[in-house]
Length: 203
Image (cartoon, rainbow, N blue to C red; front, side):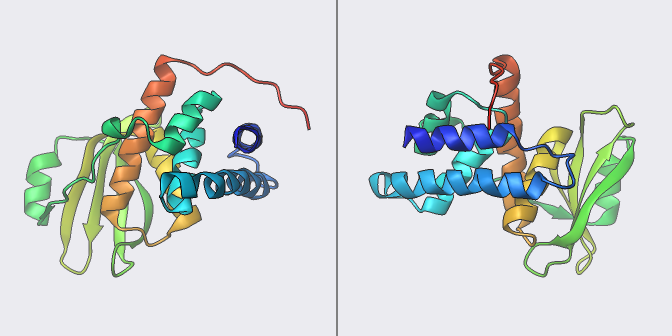
C-alpha cells in the first residue's frame, strides 16, 4: 500500500497545471495510482474506494508529500477537522446587494452549469488581480436568487475545487462545491504552516 501511495505522490509532483500538453495525462496517472491505493484500503476501511481515492487526491492537490500524512488523509484520521457540509441560504437580488454591495471587485465566473438543473452559476468576486480571497457566491436564474458560499474564499482553493469538479462532476451541487472549497482551503492553510519538503523525482 505504501508503494502505491508513493507512486501517487511521485506522479502528483509531475502534474503541472499550466502544461497544456501533458497536464491531463499526468493527472490521470496520478489519479490511477490513487485509485489503486484506495482499492487496497477500501475493504479494510469499509468505505467506497472512490471516497478513499478522493481523500488522497485532495491531500495531494493541497501539496502534501509526506506518506504518513497521506495515510492519515486516506484513513480520515483528521476527520474531526474536515469542514462540514455548509447550509445554503438563497436570497433575492435586493437582499444580496444590500448585504454585499460594499465588497468591491470583478467577478470571476466558474461556469453556469451547477446544481440539480445544471444552470446555476458560481462566481468569485476579487478586488484586483492580486487578491487572494474573495466573495464566493452562486446565482440561480430559475428563481433569480443568490447564495453566498463564502465571504472570504481563498482563490487557490476555489481554483482547485473547480479543477476537481471538472474532473469528477461538472454539474456538482453548489453545497458540495462549497464543501470542497472549505476542504482545500483548510489543507492549503495547513500546508502553508508546515511547508512540505522538496522531493526530486526521477523517471
